[in-house]
Length: 217
Image 1 (cartoon, helix red, strand yellow):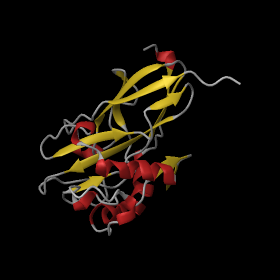
Image 2 (spheres, rainbow, N blue to C red; image 1 turned 90 degrees about the vertical axis):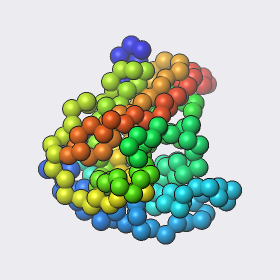
Image 3 (cartoon, rainbow, N blue to C red; image 1 turned 180 degrees about the vertical axis):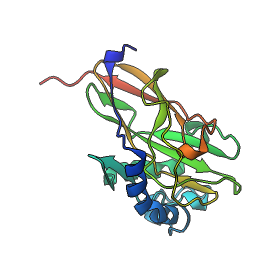
Image 4 (cartoon, helix red, strand yellow; image 1 turned 45 degrees about the vertical axis):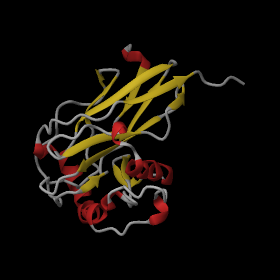
């Protein structure tokens, strides 16, 4: 893929600003991940095999816009809640009791249409510590095997809650990509976790999107 064919929009903040705004959400993030009551209406009634800790999750979803942390749209929250019902084949592989996955609202987009990529770390094992404060910056994300986000991690400061699994952490920034030519593109994510954790050695599922020509009048 030619570099000009992809525009990546990533929100970045200094560690100090990230800590100041992120800590205000730390307790809420932990409550969402661990203590929130499931909403039966949030997921299909046919999924009796879904773990209880995934039902109705996430309760809330946040993103950064113009340096501020805001609630993501209801549509993106609905997309995130689809994670609970995804088959394992559409999630990242499990390694050391956890896995990371990415998902988008649809599989087909028009040229120039924003592709919004949501991120989740799922801790399946009770021994796994989850650094839930966020939204955490996205690192080591690749489009068609080309690095599309910073590979270097931010400073190692962390002032948030660290609950143990099992739980799903959706407190990551939302990546936005736009493609200016039709084609098929594959997105993968590797840089999960808080900076203080270093490289978790995880890799997401391959998220494949098809870009088609824009409709003409």
